[in-house]
Length: 520
Ligand code: HEM
Image (cartoon, rainbow, N blue to C red; front, top):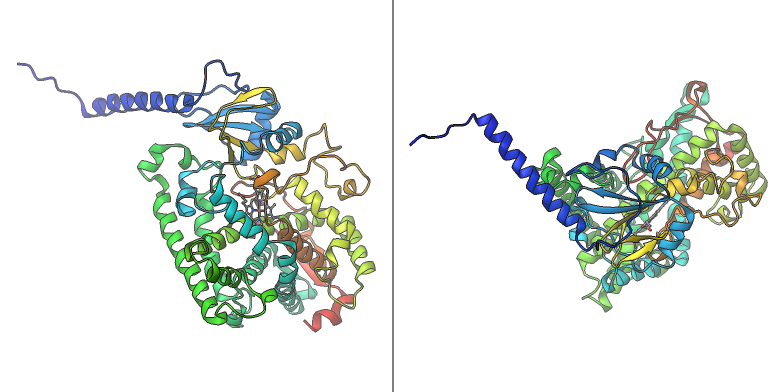
């Protein structure tokens, strides 16, 4: 009998082709799952076998999707590996999703990376719509992030902002010519993380002055390391999440990196909870309590709901959702102002007139500074920190823009494109805070915090922090671009919309504010 022999390379090639074919069939079946042949799907760019439209995933993803919307319309369909997605890029279609179909779109798709990072999807931002999510949401909205709680946190926020300004002032005092070159990106991230650390756990009792260049507590520094290890592995444009092959082989080592960082995060949060338990014993002045202390006192009456696991998950979520969003927003605002010095001067004049130069701006001043508010709105219009919101998923068949959207489809709302829609905004790419004063913005859809029931619960805290940090920087210092060069406004990609080139600037303490700065 003759034995057939085959070159091993040819054998591997044939086997790979067969596997690819089977996988393609499987993915095809999965992507049609729940879809009815008579459905009228939204238009779609040409797809390729196996990958669907993954080859169109370019960075920054929101900008790539905006270009596709210009070609295929404000509601278009994509297949990302085995996952169906609908991308919405017009104000009307977004309104339709979050009014008429708000309940249908209140689910989240659970990506493998998010599953690893959020205890199997049991976090507030990743949980499916239902009683578990509703309970977490109520706790976050009422007990932790309500306007009243945020007002109680104001002293902690102010203390962190003052500490940042004190450092900058000291750096400028010893810099040649009295102006220091400041790494604003780093400073703004540190202050946002410190604000959250203090509101979540009040760690500043353990602050040391050993490291003169940072004002973060050792806890905040340790947490920054963990965030740095987790964040790059997440994001809507993460190919690892769409291609099982990459996961099976753990290409890029994502699983190992995430598992290691998440377990360090758990240990870290457990230490914070234990420290709070020892410190307060659940007692103390309710108004001044940290979020963990509030949750621990609720644990006493409802231990089966307020478990330590639930407290850890909520805190991890607050840090994850609140730090980079807040710091990138302030960074973009400063970048825009550095490129528009006349608007910076106008904001400074407003603060001088309303607050004066004899005292530092306070959180209560922020809401009455109209031009500062307009700057923040205009920054969030041009650079919404979550340009595609968080992905939603439909739990029922519905219609958007006249097209069918089957159950189980991921919804990406391109807020970045909606905010720059030339049909709604005059010169949409231009930084013009005045549009929020002259009535142009009235009736226009501005949704940097989302819409409907999954809308950001941290909006009040975020706006208070951004307003105070920005207002204080404008009030205390004169700002210049490094070497007079225009700030590079190139966008990068990720969970948020980071600046591709981390922002730096020259800061000089204002003579009129010297006496205030010296007393900080
Ligand atoms: C400028 C700062 C911020 C921006 C622009 C922002 C924006 C957003 C957006 C767009 C969403 C998703 C909404 C959706 O999917 O429809 C979201 C969700 C969320 N945000 Fe924020 N956020 C900011 C700061 C914060 C802060 C400071 C916290 C808390 C400390 C926070 C906590 C959350 C949570 C927990 C969710 C998930 C809500 C859910 O799924 O039910 N955010 N945020």
